[in-house]
Image (cartoon, rainbow, N blue to C red; front, side, top):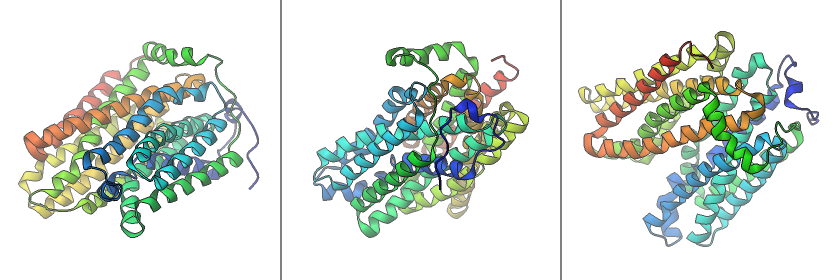
Length: 406
């Protein structure tokens, strides 16, 4: 294929459609990048003894990866407004591939911990890809394109644990990191050839660029409402997924980690509805789509409150159905929120995206912590109640925002 001609985002707004191969590249790149954050989680049990590390030390691997990602969103993602996003995407992909290669070749736990932090920092190329998709898409198709790219991203999150568990069981944990590095090298090569150049949207120096995040937060109520509502939905999302394996391991199920991976597949099925959410946002506006997504998530979480009334087998079916429902609801709301946020200021899309995702991942961190407490004190019913309350709070934010001026 010949490379896409160099262009600025503004020049694409008059195009009738965005090439399908370019949308697929962005969706695949986002999914593979964010999957790098989660490959290690199912492999910790085999990595620790192989590297002669304690379980507590090995547990720092995913912690450092997530910390690096959070720092990268805050400190690196805003650069997409200051520099050519194509260069940033390729540079981060090269850095991510290198970090994954070092992780796969690490002779000891020290190098693996260091490379895990770099994996998190450079995996934020996913947060450069999504604003790039929004900039390249014609205005009338922005929701659809962003929804498709976000489907790739969420599938990367949900399927990464399943893939890494399988590869580690059959070929070893190092093979997973090496395979991941190879996949990111492919993304870098194709992105360098196929992505157009992006004209910088601002000339602000780095310090002023970071300071502008707070200014954007204060200036735009639509951004605050989107970030708060998505953060609340992320609390319930994370509370469920961070406690599911522990719950399934105990009575009355006594199931292993592979069962939790199977529920990840159920969640992935729900994620496939994201492009539909984008189309609805394009046709009828994103506001009603945000409310529909939050309501679906709340209903799905609330359904799990019925679990104690059911037999164990029926409980598993209910949890699976709920996972499909709330994953769809959370993803629908996220695509609609991104459509709102990207329409606020085309020259600040990377920074607006950074604010949205910082709040989203803050909600995920809070959900993981609160979910563990709820499970320990109140059992699975407590987790379901926490998730339901968070989703209802997100719905309330969207209901109060109805008709509010941007």
